[in-house]
Length: 256
Image (cartoon, rainbow, N blue to C red; front, side, top):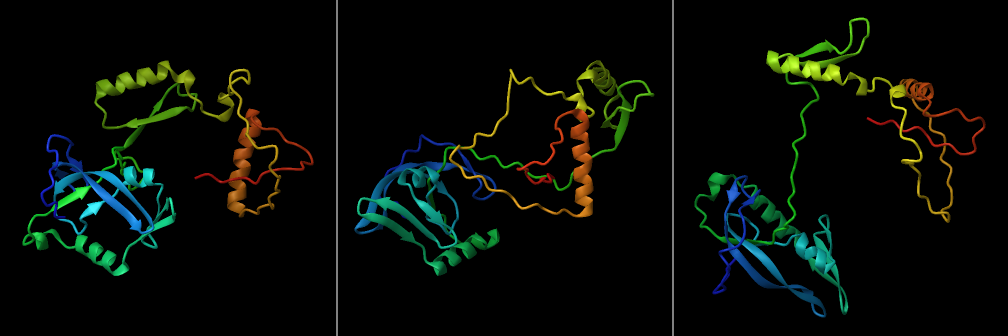
């Protein structure tokens, strides 16, 4: 984007991450007037942009800090943005072909950018930090595990520890677990719950809501067997009780 003779503040801002996978230092910060829509359904806003020196098919990126105050609704599938104005609903529509060219431009390998001159890109940045936590590829432990008895051998209550732990740390950890073994809940009956005078759970359903009965769901034999096992645990612990001839009952929900 050609900023012309406009001046931008080079004393503000912190480095950005995510544009090239590495740290991108800011050139500066600048306030620019942005016109949304076409007459008469048109609005103008002053948007604070962060200027970076990087290769991209996009000249500017508008973020949530602008879309929110404008009260805009975006649709990626239709490449449109609509927002309320004094004279009706304003609209910004993107050309499908140009959008495809921008996508392909960002997909070009880095070595093909070597002959492209540097450009100034302005980015309106959302100040809220977004932290993406990588999902594990599987749930298997990264090392071998060793079973340890928390009580004597006659009581079958064990925990698993990493077999590669240093001996001194392992011994301290085992001793700590044995000292607090009484706080572990091995079965539902070990969790008597919280007295109702302290905390009580209820569904805040509007009295005006019309009740709707669900159709009875039929589960496969494997799922029904798993449901029966869990229900029997709750019955044994006293968490639930059997009711004869109920008028209303919710279907069981299998949780992964």
